[in-house]
Length: 572
DNA sequence: GCCGTTTTCGGCCCGACTGTTTTCAGTCG
Image 1 (cartoon, rainbow, N blue to C red):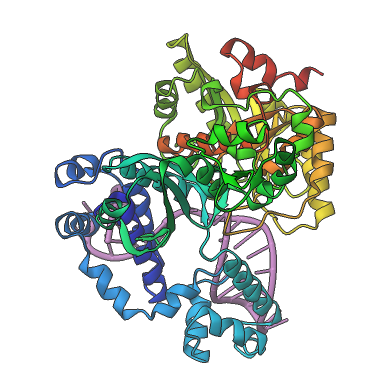
Image 2 (image 1 turned 180 degrees about the horizontal axis):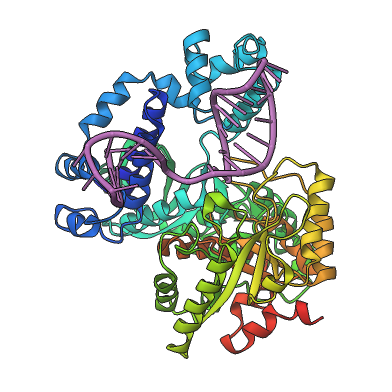
């Protein structure tokens, strides 16, 4: 299998290996850059397309170009295999621990003979790191914390690593002879932000030919057959396949979708209908009922159908059955988006290209929000650049009357809660997203106060990624969310649902609480490249989990109303 | 490894933060 994502991963690995070998860090960075470029190529990776796509691209020189061709021709890169063999695998494993970089990892390997994360954890507990020069008690504690965090999420994946794969597998299964229906179940169907694998339920009368077909499916590394079929994909992700006869399909899909906590609420609710829930299916008068589809499961239990995204322990059956539940927000409701980056700061595509891509997706407005001046690492915009960008936006808007580019900014919230530009500059933007990007380790009260102060600024339209978490990599900063939401209500500040599958922040578990406060949301892709506009599907999924409707989200408003909505707060 | 030129070699984004030091190195974004 040759694809650009695998190649990009190889280049990223080469970069890490070079750092571990102690080579020139800029050489390592060159491979990191190449990985990003390859990943964002808009064409498939073939000998015919690659030269054209990468010709004259900054960052691809003769050596890396040669390696790309070698990969296309042979599926491997010898240089990678050589340096991989030359670097102990343990080192490669150790640098995955947050807070532990290549330099310290090498010291641990050389001086303490640490050969695995388990050994390192043991060495920390034995207090053996403090004796090393450059290490101390705090470093040791930080590493231990990092290991704890990693272990907690081993074998777990963010939704965007699982959902697209699950869709491909389900589509492949549907093509097989004898298969009547196949659907994604489990946490992926419920759109949980972190999943431990993929579940697929298949309606099939005889599973022999399905098993053969799965063995031949691209990307399968290992397969164990039994009552369920357990696949291990090349990426390491597990996929459990449940083949069942068609008359059991509906119940199995329902049962395997879960969540266990949601299912546990049901026996009591189904009792008035004389229905029992067992592992075998719905039972009435000791007889297992036929449930060819999922709707029939709910009909026979005589309770209302619940969207898969809502089937969590948080689901309140009594409240739901007693009221009219409006339709959850849907992809079709979205008219425009906010929070994309361009080449003005750290984006990969130009303002014009991002706008064209948004328009091509059928959107009618796009809110650009590059980084502000303090975000040096992201090439944040100095004031003269702000004006330059504004001019380009005005020029683009003047030639396309049916599409509107909104001039926004993602302004850093500085450690004291002030913003990154004076008010007279902020006032010139159509909207401002205020986000924390530095000094993450302030105490909860200081951080909360800092964010509230930013929200009190009349020009701050919305609060960006409210906790700063990076799923499976970094917990969010300490913050009192109840106070933040109360302040959002008082100040009329919108809350961002950052749709990056790495963030999904504000967490859906807060959505109803915010909604009850009268707070409205913006679902923002935080896209740094055209293909990241696709992040929207994860943000919408999160909003659905939060029980939000089109009315709760400003992206559903028409172009004619949007500027007014964005500027409501400053007119208060 | 890549780039650009005052071109074949020197610089590469850079500042904050932290924990270790006793003036700095490593990590992160």
